Image (tube, rainbow, N blue to C red; front, top):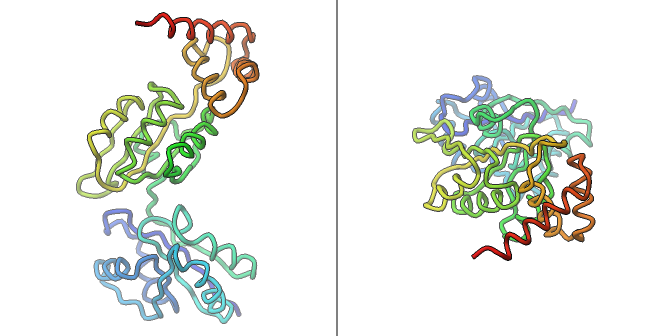
Length: 285
């Protein structure tokens, strides 16, 4: 009999949010693989439980080397519990590599559902929740960050991102540049913690606010692109979309044609908007 891999969600802030099954699994697992064993110790103390199995570290730095060891334990019949610092394993945290390896060996994988910063921020954002996508962390380098954002400039679904506080101002400024200053968004800071804050507004305003400095764990939720169709995109938006495509490497003629097809309007209308914007820029004082 092979064992079972259990992915367990841990609190993203308030330890009172821990699911009851988490304490049970911590006490009964043969192996507990934790992203940070020190944080695990603080969690078990808060829950009043003591793991009886072997506790090992499982983080980005040793994930590749430790996965075979855990798979071997699972193959031998062990119940392995995987926890990260906060939220669900595998979601921008260690876990995917181990899950994939267990599935390949036909080992049972189950979960203890728990808190998720992605879903919590989405629900609190006030933005559409019927369709959404999770984009994780953006690249640290400015050029790569802009390129990634341009790839989703026309994404219709609400987008959820994680970001480090010291990069938040640059990220929001880049989003305002690519998505437009008026695109709605929400910055969710310190979710479920004492100083929880949800800041909602246009990307331009949020970028200005973040420039003053922001602390804590950050999740950013961004409204999807507006529906494409005649009459729905004004000249400014048409010009912005052409610029985004040009900056991504398309020739202007190709960019104009693509934007016109997206909006369902004649290419001449997009061309005229681009020319008008260019002339306005040249005559501006």
